[in-house]
Image 1 (cartoon, rainbow, N blue to C red):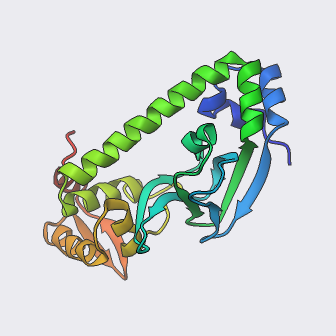
Image 2 (tube, rainbow, N blue to C red):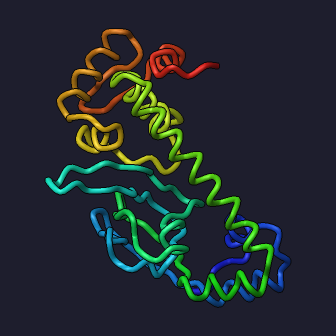
Length: 222
């Protein structure tokens, strides 16, 4: 199925290209579909494809020797993953679908060829990689400077705060993997946030009852 030019135009890698260049880029894309739990990228394997999420949600994560998972990013429609590895050579992380997902992919060799033909793409790549560095710094700050309840509050604001869009229903184990703690600590944090009046748990669903209080606990300044 041909990829829409407006879809490509909205991808940071290809912003600023004219229609003829976008049409040339579109010929290199392919579509991939996945169901929840499908592994899309394996840590340690050769990095051969850059993926863009069209629909659904994908998690990017690392796994320790004893099987502990640390989720680094949750990727939603319009964003990409495998950016750094595909420009390097080896997948540094794994990626798996958190829901049914539709992806657009472009092979490493094709992206390299397009970057040589269209210098604007090379400049866009630099901007994307700069954003990835900022995201990693934010993750380090979260793990270093926020307590567990603050990290849980931030996750809730990011993933269920709007009540719409592509928001996966996260399990306590997945939240624990995102903030670098044990599942039991997430459960305790839920109880703390409920006692503070920031959230309410109804039939295993979390409802934000006081967004301002949740932002304060998360350490987010208005």
